[in-house]
Picture 1 (cartoon, rainbow, N blue to C red):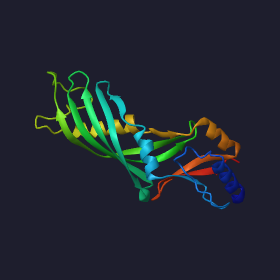
Picture 2: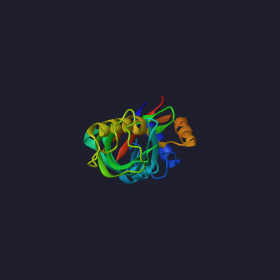
Picture 3: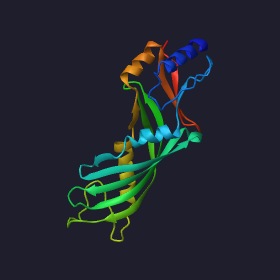
Picture 4: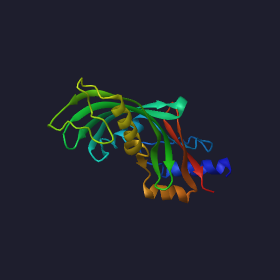
Length: 212
């Protein structure tokens, strides 16, 4: 499509208030204005916080809660870095451990449900914050070693497997935001759709592309 026509459509979308949601702004100073929606650090923080605390059950016996997320932009790698607090608790023994998890991830736009999602999550660190024990059951469950050794430190194998399970089952493909159906339909009527996602020093940019 002609760039001028695309720019006009983008300006119409902004003027009609169709650009995702109020905190997410797209500039349109002229017909040659940018064809992206920029999510700044504050916008991303709000979106991320709205998804936490996150509750998951891993391996049918371990309950995991993720909370207190903090986010950092990694524009040089086109990824974001996130740190979260992790609380694990065995269902039968009630043994608990508090850990800190750090991971990085790319972002992608999923057209099927118009959502912004984590993609290719990689756990960079998982360390013990504190540990507590309760109940008489000290047996190791299948799939993971016990959460802590007698010295109070979790085995390396436990952390590695827990990190992999968190990345695959709790975080990978996690939706941070979904475009409301009415706004998505209005953008489509203008011949526009969200597309490529790029992490920059300004924030996360979602390119608005022509459907025609």
